[in-house]
Length: 115
Image (cartoon, rainbow, N blue to C red; front, side, top):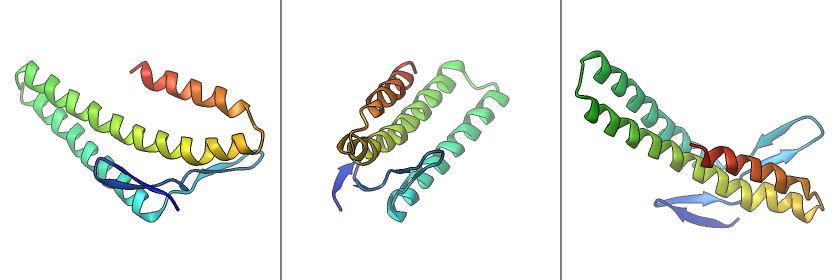
């Protein structure tokens, strides 16, 4: 297994997906999955906090700052997932001769860049 650091988190490069004709599933290590769930739980708390700020009529600039921090945290989750996907699923599919995966990745990157 290859591991790299992403924001002081070890990433399992053999963690992505298995492909079959109709079912794809990720295979993240327990450590990566736990890290992602922890990050998402924190983001969920941030969203609840933003809702509370709006309900309390908090100054708009302060709310926007919190929204920005939450977007950044979501981008970090996406970056971790994308890196693992490229280093495992995409690489594996290319090695198997499946060049269509490149179009899939480009669409995914395009979606991420729109945000």
